[in-house]
Image 1 (tube, helix red, strand yellow):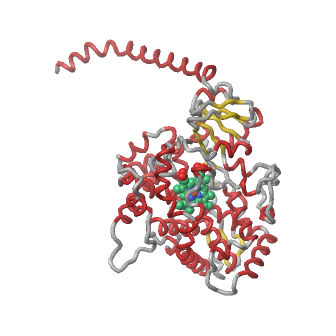
Image 2 (cartoon, helix red, strand yellow):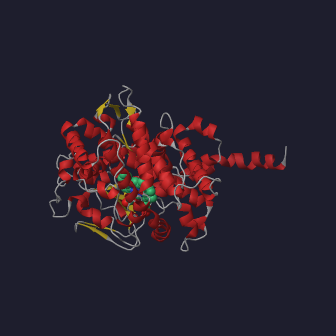
Image 3 (cartoon, rainbow, N blue to C red):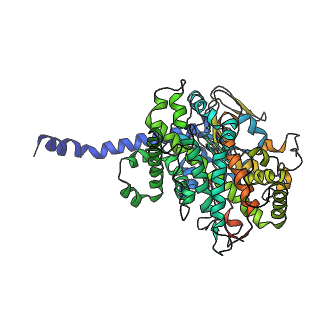
Length: 516
Ligand code: HEM
């Protein structure tokens, strides 16, 4: 027996129970003091809400992890009891009141966005950066590439992809084989964002069964809740082989795959194009980042570029594809809308397989625009609570509640888009509500309340690209083809789970159509 073993058995073993008891006692006292503080002395203790939510984050974890993305729905129910402002976690307030939207997402140079940094394992991307100064620097390098001017100068890329989209649709015409829009559209948007941002794509739209990032992103959304509560899981999993992770937690594997996609994209885009093969887009986000004089060495490091690549693909694929799916379903499902849109396209576009018009021409079509606006309204962009922290400003909610500086406050796009005072009969897909320059009851233009792209300094970076994709895809899919729905109903597009982006029922086979 070694000295250590001897001393261990003699000294440590007899004391172990006492040490454990003492540790449990200290922990219990800590929890009691913390609970008393959170309930009675915290600067948020005056905000209404369930006691358990104020006491512990496990309350939220129960709804997000055990019940799968249900906390937002639960918060909705809590409104009847507590009103529009609720303390939904020990350190977070949630507000449902469109009048407060502009205040929370104001153009404040110091506003922070806490919490998203731990969700996806890509903490240093523009999307997930917390602090305002780093965000401004990083976003500044990408802004020119996603400006309207840049999108217009590269619209031929989108037109080419849209042409391919039409070719794929025509392959289904008259065959009686159902076409899954839910599978096809993420392949379109995935190729698009990759070609635009990285100068190459995996040509997913050309693949037989529309391979895409769709399933991976769906799984990532659900694992984002797990990662929020156990951020260490991502680094722990990074060190394990994929096969072991897949067995333990299949949904986490896709998160790691996304990280690897990011690294592959980053390596690919940094390397020189193969001989004889020209890059599709001359500028890539990496050339922009590496050329930027305002970015730090860390901002240009491999890992951060990979983070940026991951998140750009993640942000650009599902949001646009889901908006299109929602639009396709409602338009095909509602004969008056279908024929009005077809009429407008028929009267404005040249007949047959004509050249695709320019974006400027498409933007002039009011009913097409209205259908897109309504698709964005009912697909929400993100379903997640969108937090902000104003480190230098005390917020005042209607002279009733003072919200101290540095408090995490969130609102939700879904709440705004279903505010019945702004969008009456809000669950109905009604493009007519967008026609003739409509105003909200407060006199502001109605589209002030279309917040699918967010607001303020963290507003969607890809908004111009997204609008262009929506105009091209929506006009050509309906301008050139006719459809009926195939074994698809409203439950295939109805938001049922908040997995960061909205997710429909889990056994949905997607929006499927017959091309006639
Ligand atoms: C219909 C399509 C889209 C919708 C509805 C949408 C929606 C959103 C929303 C709601 C946010 C968060 C805004 C906030 O925090 O207030 C966001 C951020 C972002 N989106 Fe999009 N998005 C779309 C398409 C795209 C595309 C195509 C890209 C590709 C470049 C993209 C890239 C980003 C990025 C990088 C951010 C982070 C911006 C920042 O924090 O500065 N999005 N988007």
